[in-house]
Image (spheres, one colour):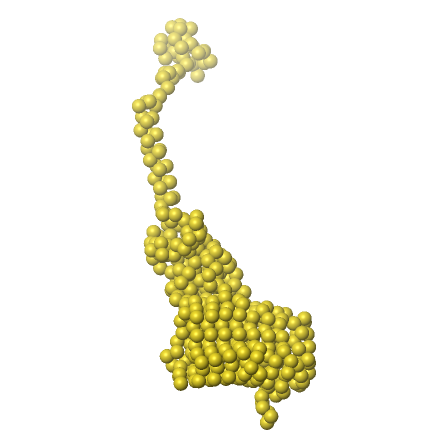
Length: 417
């Protein structure tokens, strides 16, 4: 096809870039424009806008509700400082986080242990419970455990408890031998500013083995034979296990030393009387469970100690007659006595113990007659716990109850003659 110049109309070669007749360029050219530049006066405004956005984002991150999670211990940053929150099950142990509580389960029908929430000021370690609780909206306990348990772990509502004023709050944890081996006690603390604290403690249950002895499978004929069996048990049996020994209705004339695992001694009765100890029993520290002594007579000559307890102990239906001290509780230990008889002793029950969690508050159903002092409370570790002496009889004692440490006691249902 013939190509013509668009300017003069003359015929031109097809590949021509200019017209040979009028000399005009045949190539299309775009008009060059200078580059656009951002006006310098807009930059300060954009900078302020960017700074405002960054500040708003930082403020949001700082003020938005936060969730704190931990096991045994959490540091919570409040507007007026930081707080150390600690969980454990012990009295006066506010600086000892306990992410896992291992409880030994024996033959008792049920078990109960406290779980305490302590609050310390992070910098000084001072008690900061009051200041922290003013910032709290609500506290609840959640138990995380397998579904379908025959005996689920349960907790009471968290609240302040008189027998541990050091703790901000406490809950009572109930479980049995049928409870799950592992569960989690989760404290969920909702703060007034929207923050949430999730502080946990695992509850691990060790279900102890039970070992039973009686005259049918062991030599329990005299003091030496009984001591030999107890020494063998201490060497061969796990200290967490429970041991039951049913004693024959004989008189043991030499001192007996209990050590190793907890040992439950149960007396027997025949036409000649009950199981009797005339030289006393010494209970050493070390057992992890309570040792129960049931149905045993302790007959003294006016001297010595019938039963000295440096391990957890509970005496039931026992008699103590003619001792300088019938039941001595000392060291880091808790002991109870219920439905026992204390007669003609220098001191019936002498409590001088420190730094231990109580097992139970009951000292009920005991008889104190003809003692120089029925009960001497020199030192009781749970200073706020009220000891219950309901249905006790105090008769013809020089002093019925010598409360040197001013321990709270309930004698409203006791009888004094």
